[in-house]
Image 1: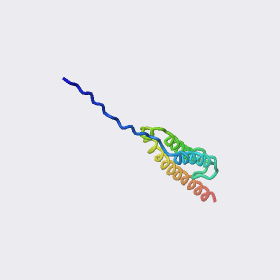
Image 2: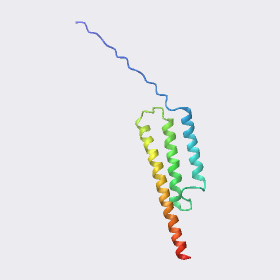
Image 3: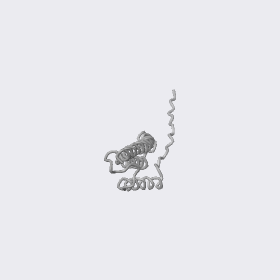
Image 4: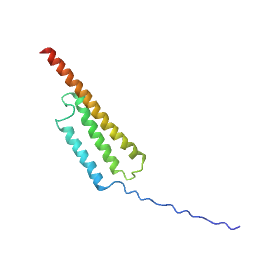
Length: 117
């Protein structure tokens, strides 16, 4: 009996990750969100301790998650896929929470000043 050995060629797919432009954009967003965090101009004012910091932390966390996603070598990894959806969920949740809490704060201040005046 003649046994033949078969060799199967595996196709090697080179995963280069993301482009330099996408990496640069990710760094730009981290810098921009850091400037936004220290800036007094916000969706929710920083004068209110928890509410004011919510949008700053949310945008900074989303930009950082984006940078991690872009700089990960294996773009097909589970971590990259999770970060992709988590960052957008965080951005949407941050905007909604900041607008709702900021709007609630403005309504309370308007009610108090209207009642007192």
